[in-house]
Image (cartoon, rainbow, N blue to C red):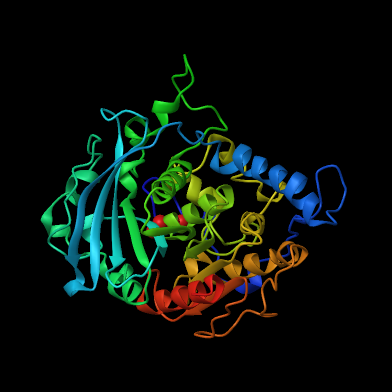
Length: 413
Ligand code: GTR
């Protein structure tokens, strides 16, 4: 619990009792603000989808900077054999503001050595720095260009962090199946602490004369999602990668980020959310686990200022998180939950995925095949996919096995 919060006072206690969830009514994703019901795919695309995107921009994640005109990048390590020869490692510096004196992010890529032609990619940001995702001693321990935050960046940029997140990335499993794995340190785009804004990408895009965030401006999650799109910009230039088959994924706060990135940027062909919970896949109106008020109090730098206005009035939000998932339609989307991750409300994650089904069906897909929440370890791989596994809030080999099956099924390779 964040300092200064007292249970039983404000913010509202987390509830873990199904009988106390209470009744709630989800906004209809197919009902437009003007009262008309969406009847056709063209209406969804031309009217309702842009309307919902604007709602998420205005009330929650904020408006992001557009795609920069220039893309400057440099491949710093090429063809370094890694993973006992099964993969090639590549490190790429991508400058984010069109000048090489400015901020950059460093993308780490593993490519299968035996690939014939461009390979599909699994792309996600990481928490611990690129050197954390694999014990491979060749990975640069990148000094981030930012000032270290309170204990955040400084502690991560050391050799002690090597391989610390390896079980969450499964580089061998991914490359053995013929896919590339790509990741970057999320702190390269926005340092994840309360004073991170000043050292983030965001002030670089202030309008002339702007000195502070507007209520509907982007914040950390918007910035991380924007970084994912910049990684994809690079992939469009790399002939070894199939930029038309990039799955964007993330865990927890970065699962929220992956959904938002995939919702906005239709170049992502598959979107995967792992244990993303409140502000990600989970329904906000379902009173279970984390609440809007809790997340906005603990992490005020994640969402825009307007979102704080919903701390006490979730029912007046013009959307719920099923509409974020619906923005991915008709592209395949996968929601993964963990049994012991009650804070993220697994049932709320499933119900949200299920509530996006009418949009997916309207667009001609099979939507979410499961009628009810599936049992543990009974994955569903319809266009909206879902599983719940045993264990804690984490990314495990089981999760990756499902992501790979889902990718293979929907990419047809
Ligand atoms: C928690 C937060 C969750 C989730 C998680 C994480 O403290 O309440 O919403 O994002 O952090 O990102 O690990």
